[in-house]
Length: 128
Length: 241
Length: 164
Image (cartoon, rainbow over all chains, first blue to last red; front, side, top):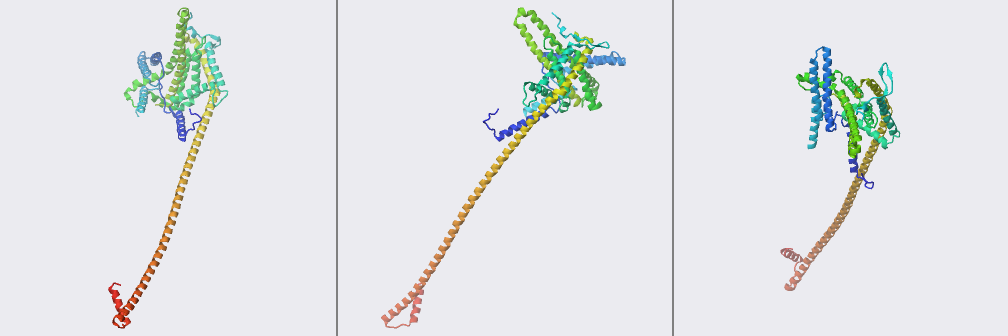
């Protein structure tokens, strides 16, 4: 930092004050516009585990949902089959999110759009 | 050599049976109590002398506070600060649970699916209630993206719905699986060290040390992931896209 | 695996609920208010310090501005004074010059009139002398005594012929 024998000029003080104010404001307003979708740091093992968990849980949920509907409607095994397929699709879409580093909020399309706008902003920020 | 899953055995310490249901105070419960008493003691001493220039303990407590506050601000926004106490409690509990499990001869209550599932289901239910309370039936609109062709609705809506319903499961399974697998791995490797210690020398010991460090990292990371996912789910409920 | 021993689930969930509720109470009653208090206090202190710094800065700037205006004013005043003095000196010089010029002009005029008078007197004398001389010459040479009037007329004619 500054040594005490160096008295900063008014311009420097103004610059420093502006910097501190900017930091304060950044601290209070950052992220007000929603999720940042921070990619979770992870090793290959971690990502592999996440993908397998996503696939297993969504298929399991789909199967359970289908089973429930079958019991309710007496339509075995039609609902089970359909729901397992949907569960698989949901698992793939969730695994796709993990691989692409998208956020985990509802709606795959929205997650892709958010990531694209974020990267668009980033590249624009770099060029401009 | 004991089985690597023996460490997950729940042993009753104070047997309690109510109406034929086993509600004993177990080693798991003991660690849960520890996960309350440890942070209680820590925060008591850390914030005993509230100085403007913080001491070492106080700055750790403040960093923790700011860490969660920033996580909520970044992922949910200002609105989410209302839920700060819940998320802070959740993080401290899961983090302590993971960390206590790293001590030798202790027990990891977060390696039990009953605990993680209870937490995750509770989070899921609360978040869903918040979503419906805030947006009413409009909350269901979330499952069908704006501007998508109507013909894709019969496919997209079930997929998003199942994806949404699988949240508590993936949340709980992720924490449970990470803690379980990590501890089994540590136990097995430690067994190797004992077996090879006399022959192999330092090598297996170094490996176990490395894995232990990795496990500490995973214990912290999983607590973080559990909390940040809660924030993301909360954000979905509060700020519909 | 002991994790899937469902007989332990009620106990685990019961104690989980109890402990996490206890932790929630500890956090909301003790840890969070205390931390919030100290963080608020620090934030307020920092804001105050910043505010003070900003105020001091604006004061400094005001002082600098005042000093600069004072300096400019003083400079302007000095300039004005110098100009006034120079102008006064110039005016005084001009006045003196004018006065001297006027006096000189009067003296020159006086001199001129005196010279004119002297010349006229001289010219008058010349006429008298010329007439007397002419009478003398005529009486000496021709023994005639001329009428003074005629002589004067002749002298005047002669003088006129000579351009005078």
